Length: 251
Image (cartoon, rainbow, N blue to C red; front, top):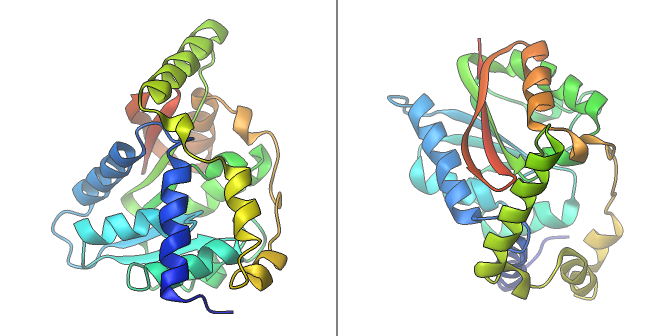
């Protein structure tokens, strides 16, 4: 079920455009994630990084340019996106198909040692709170002391009025950047399913494996879950509207 390089390049480039509709200041957010990884792995020749919900390899492709010696393992449950990643960014990471939070998912990663950083961009909001709690707890056992979890995602505020204002600020910024001119998620997938090279992979897709109420979890609740799981300090290091880069340090 391999995908040709031209096909992968076309669909990944289209994915990059589509994602700008949803992730406010997406490129800057990628840069901030790389900044944090670079800081916590300073002086290491081969830092170990795990990307949760890697999609078609967008973050690994950027990380490996900043940290060419990094050993990156990238996991996703979607066979289409993983095959696009393998074809488009084959040297950026080792790609693993697994459902985050399901029994045995971390064993499938075949990690070579303790992780320095776990990263994720616009992915963990798909996990229900119980699955997210288990995932955070499992990650504390995979990270070295002083390692970090970096979650770049949309997180709401506790105070209703502030949450509404943050969402409005983000929407207005997206409008000024013409983000909504890009095609949406549904259109991208509908068109991808019509591509003969992707048809078999699309038929294998499973959706909603861990769907729940995580999308409604507030920033404060994420911090609480991280502390319960054994992380120490946890706080945003970047924010635009309701788009955050949240960093938690493994004690």
